[in-house]
Amino acid sequence: MAPTGVRTDAAPASQASSHAPRVDAGLAGPDLALDGLSAAWPGMTPTRPATASVPGGGVLAIVGRSGIGKTTLLLTLAGVLPPAAGTVRIGARAAHRDLVGHTVGMTAEDAHIFGTTVLENLRVARGDVTEAEARDALALVGLGAWVEGLPEGLDTVLGTGGNSVSGGERRRLLLARALLTPQPLVLIDEPAEHLDAAGREALDAVLGQLRAEGRTVVIVTHHLHLTDLADAVVTLDD
Ligand SMILES: Nc1ncnc2c1ncn2[C@@H]1O[C@H](COP(=O)(O)OP(=O)(O)OP(=O)(O)O)[C@@H](O)[C@H]1O
Image (cartoon, rainbow, N blue to C red; front, side, top):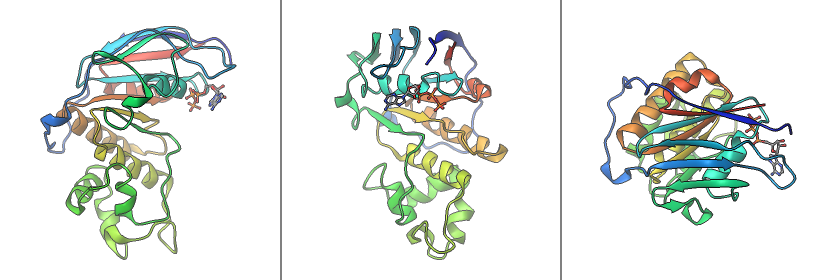
């Protein structure tokens, strides 16, 4: 791919959500700092160095055109890929794959909706998600009426008969899953894909909830208008 440039800007914090957030101080997120961070798969031209930071509880957005290296940078923040150059610090620690699972939770762009029940699909995030928590999360992402309309509610098996899931419903389910992850640093790849205007409100509500819980959030998107949801922005360009 072509060499990439990076620009970082401050952006206003998101507007308060219309939903009443449930505050959970136990999920307080770490400070996140990128210092000259560049990312690459083997054989890929590294992204240009990015320097940006958000304090614990902040939202960092990574934006840029398709194929520029946003997901690659996200995987480097997660510690799944080592930096091509520079550093990323999560609180006092360098990013490392060992942090995934207890500090870092990631919802991938192509995360799968399984051919099992709605509830089990949400328990991918955390095995002990209760029915009440599942209903709250589904309501927040705008799927409250949808799940109530399914033949067996939370126990409906998805992907069978008339219970197939549209692109927008899939994205909202993934947002609900992101909300239910137990980690204080939440990475979400392309959270707005397939979302209509109401879906964008759902995304605002999810980020509002994660903020209220004090979690640190990173979103990756090629929808440049989503930068207004962030406290800091890394813009990858050519
Ligand atoms: N597993 C992989 N191994 C090697 N190269 C990869 C791998 N995954 C992606 N790439 C390459 O890395 C480059 C950047 O891909 P990446 O997915 O990070 O871009 P992106 O900006 O997130 O794109 P999009 O917005 O389309 O999701 C691309 O050239 C892609 O082909």
